[in-house]
Length: 233
Image (cartoon, rainbow, N blue to C red):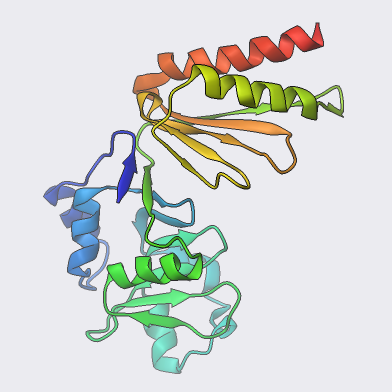
């Protein structure tokens, strides 16, 4: 996958610490994924975070009837290791099953999905959201975000948003762009992140960067704020 910024792959020791959380064997390709990329999101849809052996018990222990599960499946789900979630509320867990060790608990369906390996999970969301295999990994390592609003004193200035949007593209170089037709995200590797334009409401610009590259990100943030202050002045 295309990666944004400096990733923080897990070490063998990190993997062993995760395995101490549960007696359930971890899928081999899931462990390899963590060793290659670490924690982060895929296309801001699938969020791969620190595994949590208590997530289901604490949040859904009394609500497993949300899904069509047999009593045996309820037990294995209750003891599952949560390894990822999605922006839409799906939950991905590893369960004690040799044939289908990964279970997906959908937010908007009562029917769980089962997978043999972690790559199948990625393929599922690739197909569901029609990414056409144009996937990118956005690391959680050392990241910060800055949100700049174009609503000042209760008034939204769409005209200024359009001006700054065009001016930024003239002064900042970027490597790739996603969602160009709706809410474009311009990938800027020198800040280890991106600039996201809310081109639908034209109300904000969001900047994600890595702390070790903050000085580069601050140049962009300062430019935007200076232009907004000029208008307000």
